[in-house]
Length: 76
Image (cartoon, rainbow, N blue to C red; front, side, top):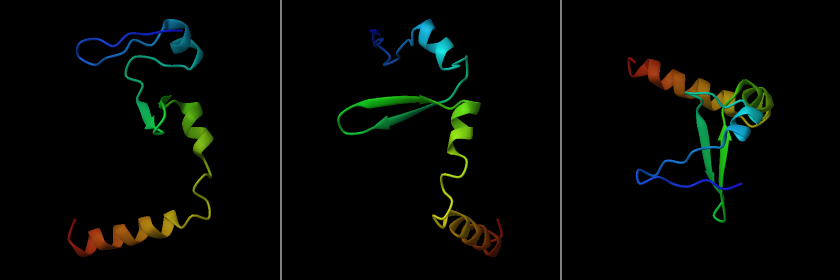
């Protein structure tokens, strides 16, 4: 399957793929540059559900809480 880039740098995702991956108008897309290829990942409910628990044990909650504490101290 091929797509073309417009003069403005836009790409049209074929309807078949939009239906398959649940891409609708205003769906946000994550663009990942692996150094060898570009990956487009739609941010859908299914994608968000797949991320659930992915940061478990990474210390992300502690970092978030520390940043919130700093924001409160700065008066934000």
